[in-house]
Picture (cartoon, rainbow, N blue to C red):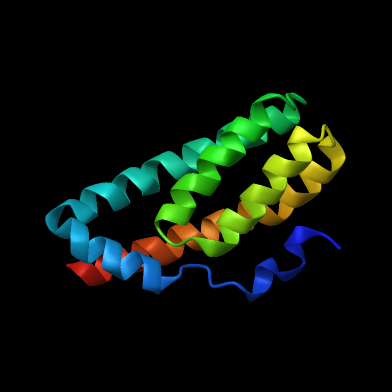
Length: 123
């Protein structure tokens, strides 16, 4: 069974991660969130381009970066799918990597929306 079988049961954003992080960061929370909201779409686009170019060597590094940054802000679904994409890419299975990424990209969009909504509530 694939590691991603239960990804949809995870929260898009785990507020038990995000809220305490923002409390600790205080005024810097907006800067961290803004950087995330800027960097994440760029990273997703790099993954798309690597898939398009069949650059299986670049995908693990990119997926790992995405996994780490999303995990830090509580993006559980994207973190899980990124880990699976990283694993599939390391194994050299471009078809499986692409299949995971087709689930990953809409989840990135949902995560960005949730983080933006959360940030708007901080003001």
